[in-house]
Amino acid sequence: MYLVELRPGKEELYRTGDDLALAIRDGEVDARSRIYHRSTAKWISITLHPQYKAIVAGQQEELLRPLRKAWTGLLPARLTGQAVDPSSPDEASEEGDALQHWKQPLWLGLSSLLLVFGIQLAFSGPRPPWAGRSETAVVSSGGTERTEMMETTETERVLPTETLSPIERRGSELVLLAGATTTGPISAQPISPTVASPLVKRRVLPRAPRLRAKALRAALASAGTGSNRVNPNSVEGILGRYEEASDAARARLETGMRVARMNRLFASSRLTPGGGVTDTRMSLAGVTNSIRVFRRQQATIDQAYHDSVTVLAKRHRWTRREVRQWYSRPQRKETATLELVGGTLIAAIDSMLGVLDANAGAYKIRGTAIAFEDPTAAKEYGVLRTRIREQISSAIAAGGATSPGPTGLLLQAIGTTALPRET
Image (cartoon, rainbow, N blue to C red):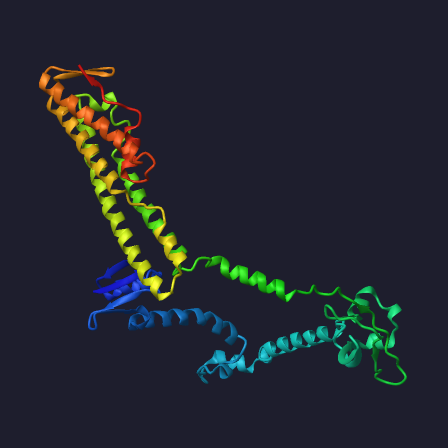
């Protein structure tokens, strides 16, 4: 049995060697496949398997066999290395037939003929303008002279520039570098004293623009400081990271309150005995848990960054202004008063909902009034309603309406709704 990995993730089990050989011949198993070697308990390449090597060698032999037949058909058997039977009448007749002698040098003659034609075509074509001998020219630029090598064709040495075609004229022009100016004519030494070299036209390119070093240094400096504008060990870097961590904690709190669907908390639909009170109490319990997690996370953030500021201020020698900038930052943690008022408000709301849940089916809500069948329940509800109203007023007076903490979000959930009065 042979376990073969055809490609990564696909394995195939071949029970006999014939099945494996058939898969190799069909191309199902190729050089990229691997086979499991049981002795070493490893995957190795299928190209190392002897059966694969034998099949591949046989396929290559079959591919080369028609080519050998085609080439050896033109040569006799004694040149191809094949065994010749002297007693064979066919071979004797072939050796003795004078009409078959042209087959031997046929391939040599064809290749020689093609080679001759190629050489004639190469030498009969036109020569490029730069294929002549090199000449020395003296070019003066900026008051200094320098010696350069010019390429001039034999046609340009014999014919004047006016008799050349436009293409040949462009080939004979000397192109200078950008920014180089010539103040004198270009003189070239002729090959022989009897043949004068033609005048070479000059093409002057515009000067390259100059870069001011001061402006370039300013641009590089601004580009280098743009990506790392704030030092992570400075007070600005600490404040930025502190704000990011606090915003992430507040975002999680908002997500928890949004999932709990805390909006219009005292609406009539949330106080009805037909399931509204139960859903409201579950939502309030989820909000309470989210607020508790947020306050614990915010306290951890404040403590961690306070320790970091203490270490960095000593290590990097912050100034008093930088230390004062940290301690004068906007506080993300609620004050103790707001935490106390918020906790008391949530407890009072939960108690009020508990009274309604305990008297389910024994009260009715008509507009802004609620009527209880049990006078004791109505009295208890009235006390809790008054306490909730007082706690809301205290939270607003303590700045809870503008606070980014849990108390501000709770006041937003209550909104403009109010509890119905008991009758």
